[in-house]
Amino acid sequence: MGQKTELTARQTQVYNIIKDCILSQGYGPTVREIGEQTGIRSPNGVMCHLTALEKKGWIKRTGKLSRSIQLTDNPTDALITSCKEVLKHYKAGRLQVARKASKNEKDKIEAALDSIKSLTSKR
Image 1 (cartoon, rainbow, N blue to C red):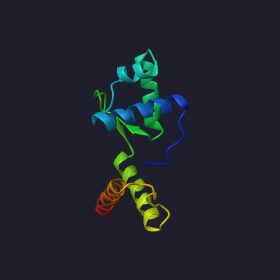
Image 2: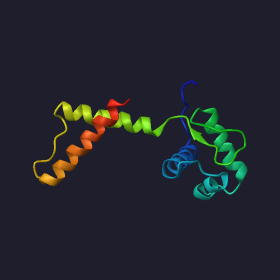
Image 3: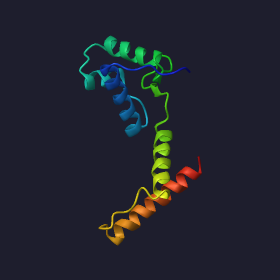
């Protein structure tokens, strides 16, 4: 797949609805759900935006199956990349636990960083 092209404001809105639905429910929204959330009354109007997102490389669909919309980027990979950045800054000393943080808060932050280390070492 080539480089993704930029999205219009409405396409970005549709993409974000799809992404949020997949992240929260584990599967994509229906055309009707997208229409309800965007205010697009016509299913054909929603389909035009989905076709544009697919042509621009942001989503992929399996035939005409309901809820078959998938993102071309894996959101988990983006999260892991972000975690690696946090860990890199922490190791370099640029990210420090606030002096005013309680011992309990510091322990929670250290536990989160340990989780990040564990997660990123698996990738």
